[in-house]
Image 1 (cartoon, rainbow, N blue to C red):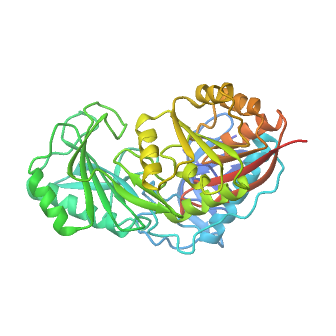
Image 2 (image 1 turned 180 degrees about the vertical axis):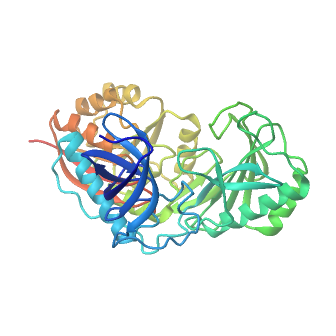
Image 3 (image 1 turned 90 degrees about the vertical axis):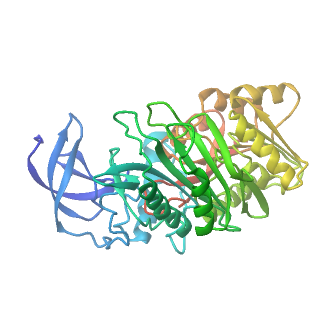
Length: 451
């Protein structure tokens, strides 16, 4: 039995999906933020349920051999990097183990998992920052939310962000203070500035800035544009997004470009991508290229195949596939993403891709009815995984291969078990580390049709 509010000694032996350390007291799992495998800790229990508990780290009695001093002084309080206190090589091993054990436990999948492909330099890799804006005392605060809360941990430098994002962060804090701009308060729903978002092309250095407002326009807007361009001449687009709802959702429906072209261009492999303010584009360009090249390799295309890319987004994977496929069909439910995908097709002079707007489970059957037979199906769903109807549709199309790109080992395991039960076999699982120092992990999985 564990009692709330009591002091215990615990040895951490695993990492949870949110990056928290996991150990056991009297056989019951206890989750402890800041703990890493191998730590012996003194903790105080803060919440006790029937089958698990949470504890607050009070003292490190014996540090893990993999414990290091984080490069960032805010690593223990900021929710952005949950495992920066762990040696990077050890991070990769624990992520591989998590994928492997999750596939076994949830999906009964026993296929081998390859070693995680990590980064040579796992810092300053993020091309996009979303800084919430708040007020504390007599000054604005910007940074990231404390783990498990909406309290902003103020920062001047994030060690995993592109340096340009940090430079713009410092500028915006100063501008708010100099011109007395009001800041949004989540509790009252009042105040103007909500979020400050920056994006950097890691191919050509182009920059985009988006200011999310609880209102119509930024006071001193022209001055803001002038001063921010003086600071960073590579800025190609400045936009305001209007979010007037009392909500935790970052973006509102309306976005207006107040300076520049309305997009920046980044590059993955041989393909260029126009990124607009609301476009989804992976935050780690270097590792995204590794991820998508792995997916392309797993497709093993000869130039004669038809490929259907479900949840295609702005066409990043689809356009990779066009290098070796005869024809690629991309399906996506977000209208703006489909427009971006078509625009990126034109930008790269690609003629063997077609993009369809709609639900994957509705548009894929239509293609099937029109006589389109997929040799390979690629899926890259959101964290919740594939809808069951999508999996049923894929099976009905009888592709020789399925390449599943996943950001969530749990839903990947669930979906692989369904596909294995319908005639497919999991052959390869390759994790790729896109989110260094966090608990997140991406994987590419190859399934082939039995017989």
